[in-house]
Image 1 (tube, helix red, strand yellow):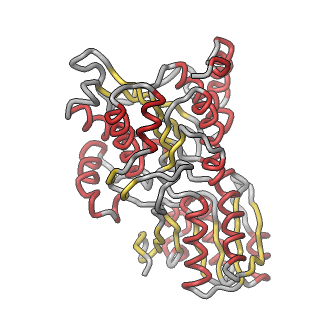
Image 2 (spheres, rainbow, N blue to C red):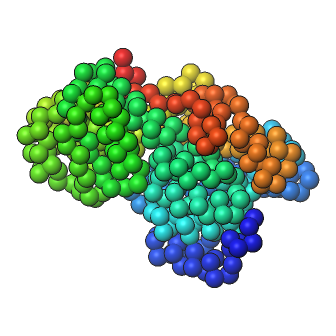
Image 3 (cartoon, one colour):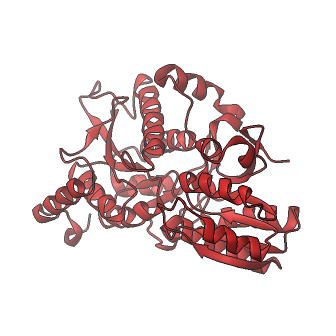
Length: 388
């Protein structure tokens, strides 16, 4: 840890005030119920987690938290890591940059050895800065803005494909597979959605397509009538929504009601079956989704799904498998490091070559996946299915 970036008393107080103001946990960190404390040697390894546990994306955060609890429970039942048990410490970032900064500082003050998590890129970007300053090895499991990788922090590793990977997949599907010439791209100015929109625009233009509409909406927007009218006039061959599922469902519904031309698709921020419920089954039919690996389409994940359902009485969420893999991957790195020394764990993470539920994981020098894990799904008869 660099002396000049240590967490002082004033920083901790400010972080706690920010958490309270932004809807976080004013009482400090919450130990996840799925972790076991203590070990045969009387030691424990604290692994921090950050994602939204309040606000619009709280469902995603809860899904990920539960998956982490399942992974930690399995590791602890098998003897832990080098004889020490995992203790999970969760903080709510509310998908908000200010709250995320305070939450990250709180995890540092809690003395976590490592961090696994991250759903909203807008929250993950400032949080990774805090973890970097304090030398804490971090696995980002869902957030995938290219801006996270562009920071070039050696302690930060991403096990979801980046925005560049996703933009390539979206462009391939729209321009090459569906022969779309005129493309519309809509984002909501959030860090993730704007980044994906901008990168996709570049990819589309490089592939010979023309972006006829590139527009932003308010994250809380519910009436898209003026935007839909603009799209109807532009007559796109394909429209790509890069923001989240709540707005995405309403946008798809109004898009179809007004009879806008061309196919419509969404990025992985809208990857939740609530998208179909909000849009309506008929309107959602045919929508494509550029998507990172989800448990239901992974043959290796059958036991994980069964165990998750048995423990939580619900299906895993869209990012549950990635969060589960993140805990297992971090445990593997700590085991290979042979200690809880943060630098040693970071070096072990960089050398990872591990088979997980979501695929083989190894990293580039920038801490991104060596190979993209994105696929394209499509809404068929009211559910998600692999696109053919």
